[in-house]
Image (tube, rainbow, N blue to C red; front, side):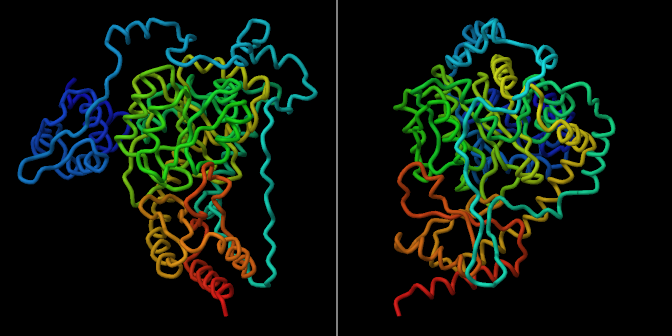
Length: 521
């Protein structure tokens, strides 16, 4: 494989020279064309061979260094540090490729999903739309409903919510979004339902975006649209997990993951993500065949899974009938830590399901998520989704979002939001450390749109302190419901995206007052 040809291919897909060169070099290294310990061509040589500036080459190489693919040696050059793990032989790969797409190469379906694939249970969307279903909104999968607790403060001060769900709504172009909605309503064919898999134009737009911005190559036929990432997790677990099956996840983690596993009858096996190496140790001693993880920005800690751990995960997936669901909920926004491509990009065995959402990048009220599936898993998941949703939900919103993305507005919004939030991050972290750093240990190395912290005072004082802070009108989210294992200390998540700097100062002032109130007199 010629690195110049590889670069030009990525350039056609991505547009920017630095991004295309980074991905071409990474692909070249991962393919083994430059092996562990061997030197990369010099930056001048690379720049000359593919006709780019040396600055472009340095930018791409710096990113590879930060991710651990290569390392620089002073006065000597850049050397490959990436070591590929052992995968199947070429003959085994050819045998797998010969299998029909409906046959899973690694993981079998759950008993329930296998039953759904039987002839008497399979229907096309066209067949379903010929019938009227009085209860088509009902759901076969029951979920634990988390009640939203209304904030009530004894004081009359203006409440300050540090809720991590909230975004700065002014960044979202309401005018353009309304134009897209009006166009979707105007062009809507009200007599024809949308395919259960989701709007075709939206799936195509997502495929183009993922290829250009995330390095994921997938056709629109591999993408299924859901009403949020939680529905995707629920249906995927129902499709892959049998009663009593063990599923690996993280602790702390997004509560929707453990709910999805348990709703399918599975057993949660959690790895303490704050203990470096715990996940790898779990993989060696587990009987699980499925793992659900957030490797790109772990929720809620914000940590990014190291290259070594990523390789261990892929090795685990390759060594047996294993599948990984990668929940990539907001990796578009990240500062302070190493930025990696999705795990899906490194996968050569169709053992990764990639789940994404627009609720965290655009607005929480837009309940649209999606999953990129291996080809063998598409039909079972769509068949299951047809039972719970014979008519695709949110048809107008799906068509509007497709228009929004095809106009280029989504990527424009992401760029605008990154610039806006990046100015806030350092100020927010510094302020919280200076004002209330004696109360919390901050995880500020990898930060997205919220800051994760562990309480550093006596554990029994945390609920007292939080109650008193509520009295002063300050509210944040606890981590207790996300801690599957016994935590080292109570945790908290502080959102900053929606607030002004003056709000942060005031929130810190009130927290200090709350702490002073509970001190012994």
